[in-house]
Image 1 (cartoon, rainbow, N blue to C red):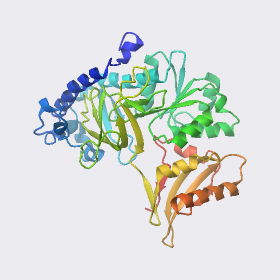
Image 2: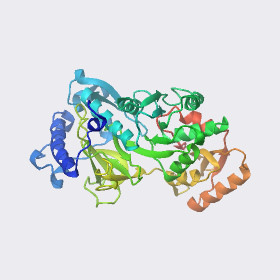
Image 3: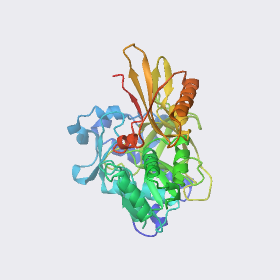
Image 4: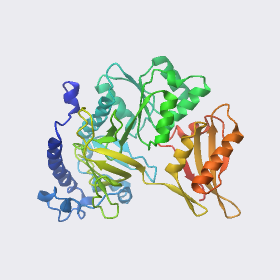
Length: 435
């Protein structure tokens, strides 16, 4: 990509242009997929000249990770991919939180479009060459860290490639923030909270540091977690959303009116997971994503990402991103524990605990007991200089009132959970240990 920043970001000029791009690229996406043996029967009878008709498009079945896991690893390229191995320049690892991770090949052209997605994200948050971004996403075969870094450098923004705590120790990261004075911190929200907790223990007030903008992605951001991050860092949080099967798909604008979807690069639908049919506008459904540009090796077609979202046609403001549709993320497919017949929603439990300023961090586990009764254990790192008894009573009362379950509360030394979380791509904050 050459030329000035505006041309490199390739913003479409209107919604009509976006629609035209989708018309052309959806057909190309299906034609590419037709080359793969995996799609041979799935696309039989699909009429290429009628793809803009919802009745025709929705004949294409949703694609899931479980279906891809059925392909033997040594057959994945031959069965699913549509370009020879000589065109592959790198592999991306899927998150693998819900099962065996998959590895997706990417071509040079795929990489150009993928970096474009991340470059746009920096433009939306107002980053310029005057900024320096400290990157704490895990560095490795999972692509998120290096894509943020490459995109920033392409825009002339300085970078500090730290990776997660397993790449660069967390204490060293805090020293770098103090000494190199980055203006943007990018990482998973859970790791941002860990750094804040560790900084407090070291007597370093992150809210008075040089960081004024936080970029988070790769895990759900609840209102409670956002509030806690902004309070701890004294910085504005920008939520950004992507998936390994695509790239960075949507970015929160400075107005915080939702996540603007790069609909010229990805065709995203909100559908009923069982039927694959669209849900009414504004209602929550499952995201189905079709890659329109970075699909030159892996033709992801109506990919069921497992995310619950709603979407409206466009947002507000005068930025070039304002014409894109706006997505509200209802967080990943709802997780819950069933304890003594009661469903304990993970998102609700996280909000309940993180809204409490005396809770620095937590982990929830469910264990079976010899008596046959399950127990909810809350492993909590409390804020410094507070009464354990008072916090225990407060958390007990709120959990009982909300879920009608009495938890077992265990207080941990500060930093215990951070050491466990920081090496993970995504923190395992909710764990069922009943076997």
